[in-house]
Length: 594
Image 1 (cartoon, rainbow, N blue to C red):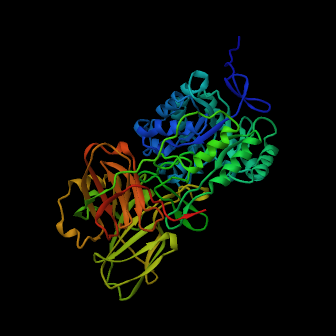
Image 2 (image 1 turned 90 degrees about the vertical axis):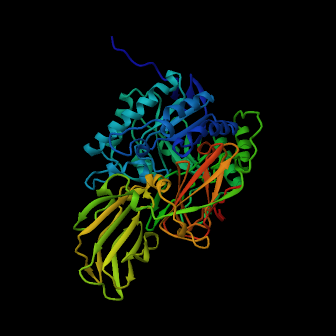
């Protein structure tokens, strides 16, 4: 006798999603657990439910769980299982999108750098070596998802295969293998795929066994019609209803008119479609997780992922939230509960103390090389590298130093004197240097491309270094700086009273301060008097700041603070004109542009 699995409680019917046999419309919102402090997951889920949502969607970021090959971590801020359980506890369903590629404006599109550092590997394809790594990853993720499906009493109703694959490739064998791996693991709920409703993308990303969904934020009728041409039966769903946008360093802060977004949402729901609002709550690119885009010009993303979402980075509800709630109430039940009111954060300041340049104390000597190695050749997730060489003879003055390409930002020194910077975002590849013998170049990776074919591109000094047209022969002495440990280096260092002069700091420099709070509280750290660097609060890595803007404050989640004494650590890589840690009442994400 052949045994078959019982049908899923959640199915795709001829015209609708079916929950226990009855038509069901999904009204979901995107919220990435990796971008929210875990102690604030429940609050954000509860607030999203108040808008009228019946589901929460999340990506799974592979490189957050396995930054080093074979070292899997699903605890604390990476505890996907707990996040899904909290969704279930709130009485909501969950949609999980494990990739393995996710885009999401996330570092390397979610793919680990140890995977993408192999230049011969064909990413997002049926390349056997790539599939071997993906198989191991999906086995880990599916172990978490399987017992949390709606069929086993959990919250998960849909699982997505890959992400916007039709915009990248058309390897049907690859998609078939992902489907096979997912089903073999015990995933019984429906499987979906998503692409923009553009014919060639929908065609490339299609595969039997996947329900086609779309990603768009306007021209609703046109987009739904295009989607229906490629998904002949079953419910129409916008898996990414774009209600906001992301920001790059050096550009303006993006917002969308809430009335326009609400009108588009109403049109979508009036058409009978299901929806996943991207994002209902964006959160933060904590630490070094922000990605970058490059469509002819490299543009790294800011630390905030507020996204102009209905729920702000700090958890407040907005006019967009209220407008969306009114729209949803026309089409589905909405909880009759009061909405949370914004709370101003504590306002205070603390004088910073300098400890001098701490980069050397966190540096690791990697040896001598004939040519500058890429960061990828030096190991996974290398962010800061110092390349040094001694010139055979003093450089003539003036001389032109030229790099094939800097990825992504470099500080150049001659005989320990800073002489300039090279910035990928503006196409710098050469500068004039004075006479000297010792050349030192500190290179920072400012975000890995998360979309299209430049995912996994090598970082560092690319294409050789030349002086007046002649390639420097080396050897190059190389050191890597472990950014994640810089806060501990600052804490352990002795004070440098001469490091701050007239409230100014010439970096690189480590700085620290203490401040007290009556109780844990969300904070907004004002960075407008600072240059470029990193910040920690009580060891929690908030992320990057950059005078370039638009972002002028960093969000400090309340659970990262404590009653009593707290510590802040700053590593300033350039110059600081206001050596104080100032905390303000409200966030400043920059001048808005719609």
